[in-house]
Image (cartoon, rainbow, N blue to C red; front, side, top):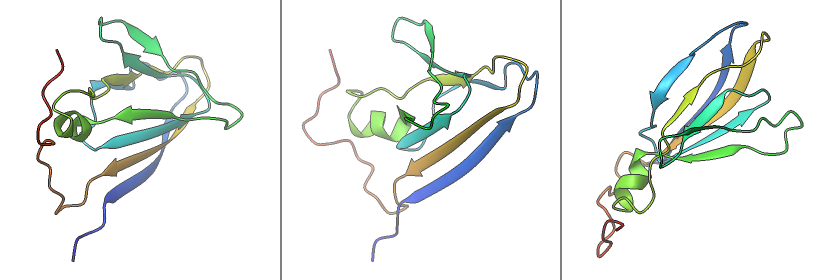
Amino acid sequence: RPTAAASLLRLLRYPEGCRGALSAHTDFEAFTLVHQRSPGLEVQRGDGRWVRCAAAPDDSFAVLLAGDAVEFWTNGAVSAARHRVRPAGASPRLSLVLFHAAADDADLAPRAGDAPPC
């Protein structure tokens, strides 16, 4: 019997005046879903520039980040999102983050026949 996929939901709080709260990284899971009410999440573009993700003070949207597992499964057709957190402003920053990974017994081999992107 297969095991269930692993998910972890975290409420993250960055204290008032926090700078450089989380250095640049990719997540090893398949997907990460981030909801932030105040800015701070930044994603690195293919050209190396950093882009600040919009905040959703009205709870209207979240940011979906592909993880290392998706990059591996697609042979690089989808890149893992390199991101960091750099809170702005003097007030504390709250975010709700859902990390979703494959089941422990999932076949993690890249899809057959897929070639790396040109």
